[in-house]
Every structure is written in structure tokens, then in C-alpha cells.
Amino acid sequence: MSETVPMQVIARLHSDFTQKFGIPRQSGLVDELEATVVFEPEFRNPDALRGIEGFSHLWLIWEFSQARRPEWSPTVRPPRLGGNVRMGVFATRSPFRPNPIGLSCVRLAGVELHSELGPILKVRGADLLDGTPIFDIKPYVPYADSKPQALGGFASTPKEATLTVDIPPELLERIPPKKRAALTGVLAQDPRPAYQEDGERIYGMGFGGVDIKFRVEGSRLTVVSVEPS
Image 1 (cartoon, rainbow, N blue to C red):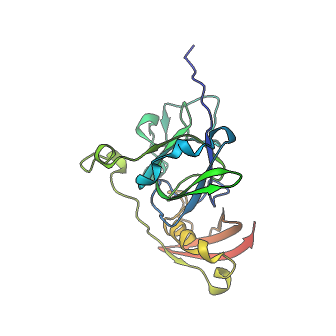
Image 2: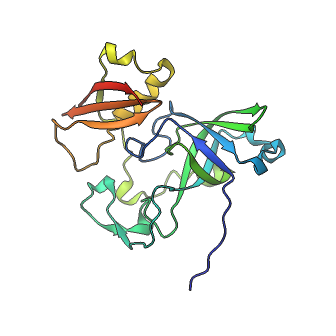
């Protein structure tokens, strides 16, 4: 039997994503996305964060909490390849892994000391679901972590924002003003599965307390409804 190692949840990330659909496929693609890291009670010691303000970016090590499976598969179908090609699980960032652990680089936007919750990290660019368990936090160190000449395999080309987003004014008013730029950035990344191109299909996602429905025709995404969650 393989060895198991206990892990403690040290914090949880709180974001505007209430469901998996719509979350950017990598961290840092939409810098306007704001999130907070709130520590569990036994880890709310400000001394544990001493010196963290000197770093611009952090690594979050976390759990794909909605991707737990009793068995694992040696191959997966990366969305980057259209969902039709199987690659080795260890050659991808798929959530369906022997251990459902994720790694994200986020920008540290500030540290706030809350009277009840203790120190809270404000971060940007996170690709995590609201309530995601955090196992560890480490500083991003540019001289060691940045490898400009590294090869990216089948994911070597950055995923650029490809869609023009059209939100009618009457629907835009239903979205909290401070969340509009982040939502637009998320939608521009094209949250649809890579293999779906039906221009008549209506897609839906939850974001920041509202349910967004949209359709995509060619390179234009049009929001068709915005309702409270």
C-alpha cells in the first residue's frame, strides 16, 4: 500500500467564483480578479506573515476540492488541445490527479489585519473557486522561479483574451461596478469548453453574486441576462 501523508488546511481563498465554469484556466490571466486568503483560526498569527509584504507575488498550494475521485487515470484530455487528445496526467495541470493539488502564482495586493479574522491576504489573478482549501503559501522568488527560456510543451503559447465582450448597458448596471472589469476580463478569455462552437447555445456562470448568461458568435461574446444569484 502506498504511503499517505496528512495535510492541514491552513486557510481558504474567497473569490467571486461560485462554480467551476468560468474560472480562468491558469492564474494571472486576469489581474483584475480580486480574492482574499483567510487563515484558519490556529494559523491567524501575524508573525507567520512577517516579511511577506516584501514580495510582489506568492505561490498558493491548494486542493481541487471539487475534483476528488476514488481512482485516478494515467491520461487526461487537456482543454488546451480541444478536449479530444489524451496526454499523460503528469504532463498536464488537470485537476483529476492522484492527489488533487493545485499550484497558482498570484499577485499580493496587500495585507489587512482584521479584528476577528486576523491577518488577511489580498491577492489578484487567482484561478480558484470560492472556499478553496489552501495547504501552503510560499513567496515567489524571481531569480529562482522565473525561467524565461523554459519550454512549454503543448501549452507553450499563452492563452490570450480572444473575445470582444458586449454587455448591454441595462445589464451592466446589474453588475457591481468594482467587479465589471474583472468579469469582462474573464469573459474575454472565452470560458467555454474548447470543443464547443455553437453560436446559438446559451452558457451560464456565477460571478460576484450574480448569474451571467451569454452566447458567443464568432469572436463576439454577448451577455444576454444578469440575475441575482
